[in-house]
Structure formats: C-alpha cells, structure tokens
Image 1: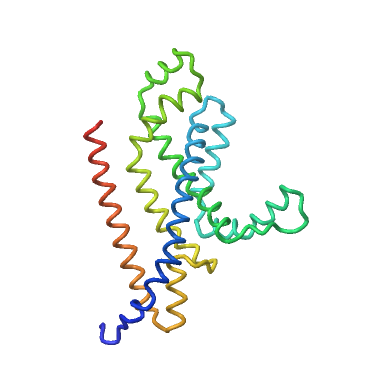
Image 2: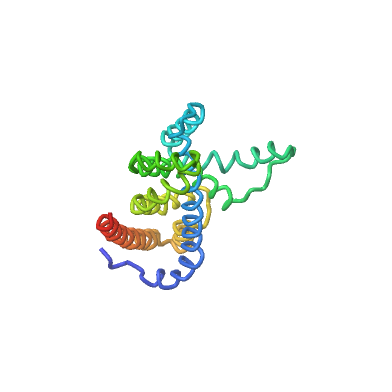
Length: 230
C-alpha cells in the first residue's frame, strides 16, 4: 500500500504547512473562540432576560444560525460583508474586508449561537437563590450576572466550552472553500503542485487526529478536576 508513498514531500513541506497554514488556523480559532464566547454570553443573557423582545431576538438568531450549514454562512459573509459595510458607512463601493476579517466575522457570529446555548445551560445551573441574593443586595440584572452568576457559570462550563472550541478548530478547515491558506489549504496547494494528494491529505488527517484527540483528553482531565472541586 505504501510502496509508492513519498514521505519526502512531507519532509519538504512541513515547515510551510505549520508556519503558514497551521498558524492561520490557530489564530482564527483563538480569535473566533474569544469573540464567540463574548457574543454568545450576551445572547445567553438576552435569552434569559425577562424582556420578551430581547429573548425573542436572541432565540430567533440562535435558531437561525443552528439551522444553516456553516459552509453556506461562510459563503454569505464572504460575499455580503463588503456590501453590508458599504451600506453602513454610506459608500458606493464594497468595503475591502479581506479574507481573514470576513472569516473571523463568520465564525464569531456562527459559533456564538452554540456558545450561547452552553452558557445558557451554565447560567441556569446556578441556584436561583444566589440570583435573589444579588437582587437583595441592590444589584440589577446585569450586575448580578456579571458579579454572581457568570463567574460560577464559566467555571462550570469550561470543559464544554473547550470541547466546542475543538469543534471550532475542525470547522475552520472549511475556509479552504474560499481558497484561504489555512492548514488544509496549504496542504492542498502542495498536493496539487507535486501531484501527491494521498500523502498530503493523509498527513493533514493524522495531524488533526493527534491534536484533537490530545486536546479532548486534556479536556476530559479538566472536567474530572472541575467535578472534584464542585
């Protein structure tokens, strides 16, 4: 099976794959995780708000994003964001957003829907008595959330948030459809240049498996430690 397997193409290309492709993938994953958690937390608080209009808006947004394939969202944002930006600033020409910025906006807005549901379950896991205690101390809704509920919810939800981030790391490979040089995109360029598709895509699969399996193992250990603390 491996008689014609060219290991040399991997040896020649590994630095480019990691320095260019993987660095882009990790950077996009990190920024999208931070932005997604922030936006998702706001959406979660909106969903749990007593104001029905806020709850309806957040619920509709979450249901919409979770009902659309990610690859379609990537295409929509990539082609629509420049025109939306032009409409906001009143320009007659599409705003030059760039592939990275467009991808970042896409993943923040898409992943926020999933982080929202994680944070909502974390917030609801906090006993209602602590919320009432915050109100008794004179805090309003947002102060109670920021000082009492969210710190505990984040601690409880860290393993699940990290698990979703691993899924996000895998999903970032879909920017390949926009010809962006992420890890998969970089491997594809080398594979087509040297005619070594099997070697490159197998190497990519092994790297993703090792990273995701290792991170999943660490998350499992963290979850066990959080359970002991609780």
